[in-house]
Length: 239
Image (tube, rainbow, N blue to C red; front, side):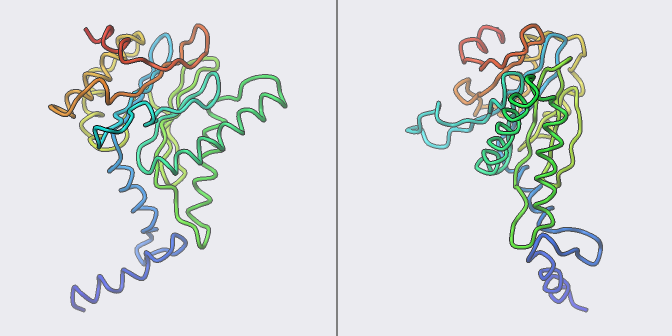
């Protein structure tokens, strides 16, 4: 069989996310994971006094109002998420997560556990890998929250999730993870974690780095409240 015949044969297996290829792959799901790697970089770090998220907004036109580009989303008072990939897909998942968090508060009069929320979101993601006529969500989310302790989860387009001490998603994720693997310490403060995150992004972005491109948030263990990080605060910490 010629090479052209092989590629033509394989093409039939990526027409739908519900069809396995002969070697046991769901090609549409694999394409969705590649989409995530084309998204702007984002990272999360668990610290001794909380958890933080920081992301590159990548402003593609100078006339865009940078405040309207949102990469870090608040889900509940104590939970936030950052996205890489198709951000409009992320918005749908985040809005679903916000509803689930509010329903839990109304029903049980307490904030939802971060782990439980991540499982619910990943169940939705998984379902879209087996529905005919629908495509997988082309986005990965880092979900950070504080209940009894600060926690950080990564969810990918397959619906799989992992808990991390620190990790990165999006373009340059391999380089960012390498930096985090070398420099991360479990007893880091939020300010030290923020400095590490910004330094890592600065290293991978090089000349393109700008404080205007950063979007971030922290959740402190002390108050279990999400706080957006301002450009001025980042500059103060990084000095």
